[in-house]
Length: 343
Image: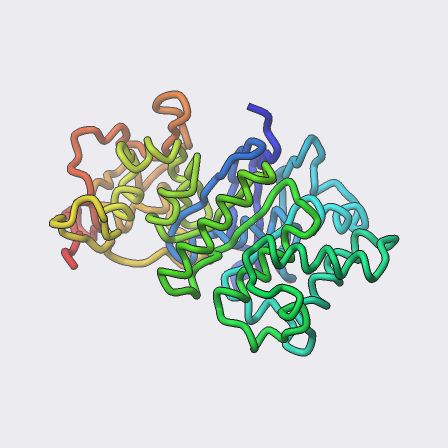
């Protein structure tokens, strides 16, 4: 496959009382042109920090401390700010989970789409930009786009505001779209509409999609490949079908076991005991071991590398493969006994 984005040993750090902690701790990922890579994990796993790193928008005092982000053959971390600004928005675009905080309430949605396009196409006339903005609104199924061009964000529903964000992101026909929890603030019906729209636009434009989500149901229907993040690290990476049918990391199994299934309606759900560790005080060895029912001395002493179990399926777990483990039954542990709790 033709790689569009390649992330190599990426480290993104933030200051802490004891020094610095890595929100993204040495991650390697690849995304091919036209494909969808989903990043999943609990809040605090480092998903959004990864997305902001790709855009080079890590808020200070955070910083990218090492690694490479290679986009279409160029290492974005080596580009001067002006060259990065030329790529950001035009070739790589991003949409966020809460459009009301991303849209300026003092300006019409049309003006904001025009502004986004004008930054990359200064020679295009105002009339031409307006026509393209209306076309962009129509493209994302905004009703009566000519009239909505002059509307303010508060005059639109949540689903319509998210469509405006998608229109703004796609106005310059980017090769890569980063969607950070794009449907979290929406009800399930509008979620389905937005996801269907994203799939249609991806098929129409051929763009690649980096999807950030904690919703496994969403990911199952959208992704070609899934990377599971925990405490700043990728603990499992596989094709979507393989991940959901043959997960090999205890954390992935816990996530799947805690998610409602539309296929197995009688299955009990389980909660993973504990929480993602404080980034400033990460445990030694495997970062998941304080919550893992399978943890042993080796897990506490040494960090497991992300290794290939089979072609296209990698896992960071000393106990893998876990073929003998019952799916969805693994919770945390305090003393070596499972703490998975039916809910």
